[in-house]
Amino acid sequence: MLTDSVGLGVRGVLQNALPEYQVVIDGYPALMVDQLDARMAQPRVDSHSTDLGETAIIAAGYNYRYWDPARFDTDIDHMIATLEAGGVQHIIWVTLREVKPEFITDSAWRQIQPYYFYFPRVNQHLRDAVQRHPNLMLADWASIADQPGLTYDAIHLNPTGASLYSSMLANLVRTTTNWREAGTTTSATVAGLNGVPADAKAVTVNLTVTTPRAPGFLTVWACGMPRPATSNLNFMSDQTVAVSAIVTVGEGGTICVFNSTSTQVIVDVQGYFASDSDYRTIAPARLADTRGAGGPIHPAGVPLSVQVTGTVGVPGDAAGVAVNVTIVDNDVAGFALLFPCDTPQAVPIALVNYIPHTATPSFTIAKPGADGTVCIQTSSAASIVVDVFGYFPTGSPISVVAPTRLLDTRGLGDRIPALTDVPVVVVGGAGLPANALAASITVTAASPAGIGWTVAYPCGTSSATSTLNVVPGRATTNSAIVAPGAGGAVCIKANIATHLLVDVSAWIVGGYVGLTPWRSLDTRLL
Image 1 (cartoon, rainbow, N blue to C red):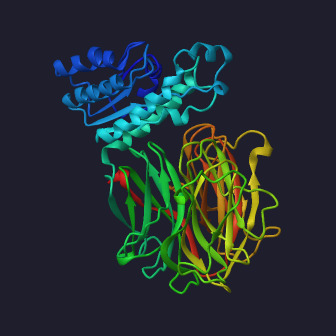
Image 2: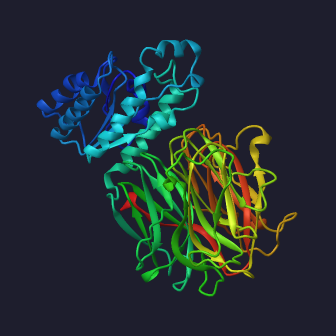
Image 3: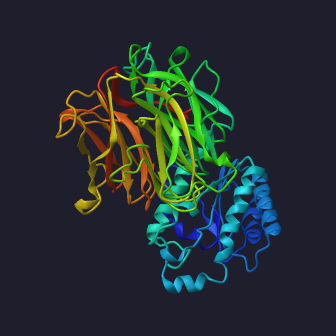
């Protein structure tokens, strides 16, 4: 790791976060990138030093007494060329904290005034550099650092910040060596093993992308069929994000996953629809995309009506429709609601929580209104994309309802401690059906204490999978179709302290078998 004074704040901490690696951290305060190259990187190459290793981390860019975009691009390119000449195979560059006054003290804000304005410009030039250099990826500190309590001033790390910064880097170092290259299609066997019969019609899965080099998307579909012009999961650079999906089983009991940019892909199986299930599979299709409207992004608080029945193979009387909703182009954090257009939600319950400048997807089984429409409403201006994957015909053994909150720990005081099983009764409780085989739930981790994961699974079992991935200071949401376990409950567990919210939107009474989630694919291990 070659760094200025900000990165020097992780000395000792990063080594502890990567105990299986030899970690060398070198740098000097107030160095610009060209100075860091000339004083720290080039001498190692000239002397044939072995301490550059296979992976190099660059944490620099804060120090510019003037801002010269062309010079900065030249400095980036020269630094990367130097490292590659020294045998480095993977280069990680840390983005700068884009300082905001609400997260630092008044005195720190006054100190940062002369030069904080160019930090976002540095980050954009780094993002552009990813397109020029196939060995470069970003550690997106900018996206994580929008919270208080991380620095002594505006940018220099305190112990809390150093720990979070090191966790981010450790995750990247461990996963950059075996990305799926951009444009790769990977098959995952989901039927014929681990309780899923070979003739299963469809499976419910959780898709996770981690450490992507650049913004992109995942598409999942039945192997043996053409890849659809839809997406299940949209992501930004260095984002770990998950979404659930119902996927038709393809040739040889497999499903196919396409990644548009270099990344790691994880597939966890949650259950299956039997061959005689009422669930109907269709070719995935796009129902709405406000990005193509040619005008401003969709305004806050205005419902977007989307026709989900009587189109693309979904009959007009479908009882429930499997849809994926993606929120994108938003400048501020917020939430999105989904409801039958003829029945607005009396109590707003979010389908998805989203963060600024990040595409955020969510899956749900939607109940259409009498005219076959559902409405999506966002709390801030944003573009909205809606894809459909299947449906339940009228008379199916499914009950789709307005989202109902079953758990919210925010009113109970402190966050739930790490690795604590939190049981949530989803069947057999007051007002809940007693005979459901599974519940479609939305899980939200609010105010998590660190980078981590949350998993939902039948109580009385255990699972080495994840339902959603979190970073501190943000509410993160994902949906899952989960079978009830002991006591008719689903258990929710996180590996970090966090508040938990659970909402239910549907119960499946027949034709579906929920399983203890199991991992079908993890490209990090290939």
